[in-house]
Length: 361
Ligand code: IPM
Ligand code: MG
Image (tube, rainbow, N blue to C red; front, side, top):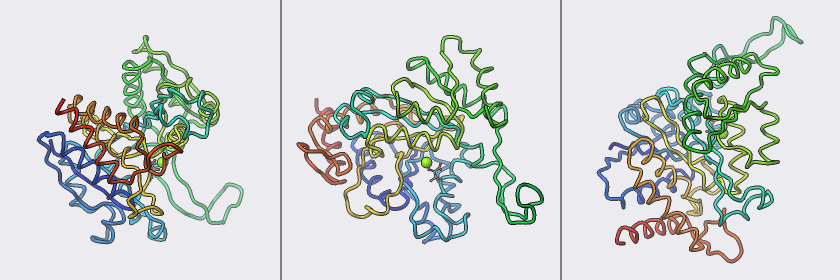
């Protein structure tokens, strides 16, 4: 089992280090190789996704990814910015299916900005299409407008597009995921305005014919954004395009009050995957040993389950995280009165200790 470890920038290096400690204590035959990515790779090699890093990622069974980005790179040409590393990995590895669970841990119900009764027991799975849509659609660029409201002036444009097979495959992923949960899918679109998303809706409906046991609901993205804060527990599996999924998954993660807890998985058609926390590189708290490593540790658990076929090891990590939370340990982002504040390394060590304890019975 070969794992490419790409810590990246900001808190990425600190949180990935803890996840690696957790993986090491499982006593499984992993081969882990670390490489630079994002701003760190740009500094060292002049490119956010060097060929050597891409090669390592392609050859691995799974990629454990930290986070990339820092404001100091905002002035670089777009192809050299750290974000291009994650976009490049998604594109080059064909990671079209992005799983972003938003789970509210009972111990952390008070951390949400929503009323506890609205989010207690929340367990949503956002499935975001990750390699198409306006993120990757061509053509894009800047030019002098020949028509529109102000012909003759400078304009910029991107292209929103989806092919039928792209929609079909993500729809299958969503319906199959729903079968393992409460058999309900909400497909989010903007069919009332956009041709691309009328097509999305039509294709999802067509694929649904193969899953008569799963309930399918369609919802416009603006309404979905509203329903997510009004009655989030009404959702189970949400499937949507790349752009809407980017926005709604951030919204959903905040419902739980603890983005530092949420893992994510991005898979291709051969179940090779990239696993990363749902949060970013948080340059403001980088190097302080205060970031929450649990989202990355839980991403490692998803990696074991989805790409490395080690469901038991995944369970051990997830159980250990629950044990640690139940014992009252909290990093600063999820700390509240009456709990014990710990730093990044202490949190990682606590998870390691909880795993070792269960191993020894
Ligand atoms: C995410 C991030 C990325 C995205 C950025 C960093 C390119 O926001 O993974 O949600 O927009 O997809
Ligand atoms: Mg995002």
